[in-house]
Amino acid sequence: MLTDAEKVNARRFMGYPVFGTNLSGNMGWQFYQAAGLLEYRISNLSTEEETVLRQYLGTLCSLEQGITDASSSLDTQVAGEWTRNPAELSERMRLLDGWRRRLCAFVGVPPGPGFGGGNSVKLVV
Picture 1: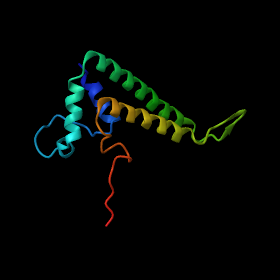
Picture 2 (picture 1 turned 90 degrees about the horizontal axis):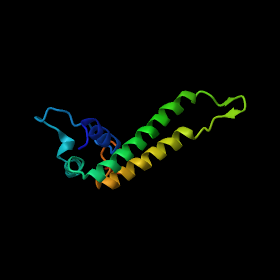
Picture 3 (picture 1 turned 135 degrees about the horizontal axis):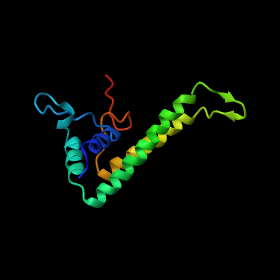
Picture 4 (picture 1 turned 45 degrees about the horizontal axis):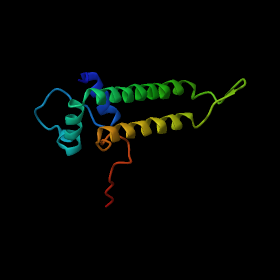
């Protein structure tokens, strides 16, 4: 069984907002079919599926940390022999989003509303 922290990270990486503990009142996103499917699936994984999901979470946490680490050198264009890759941050974010999409595909749910585009419909009036 996944820990609560693992479920939080799974939701977060798949683009679903916080779940919270207050189950009364307007919970908006939790009434979407995909959110219900997500909760059902991450609460009913086989042992083997949990192992794979944990591997995804480990990879995603590592990639996310890489983005944080890369941000520490954003102010450096050239330092001695080393030249910063100006596209590093965007490349790392694209890599992270690719792994997030793979996690969604593995769990079998669409990317959530917080995924940051690519799964939304814009209504222009």
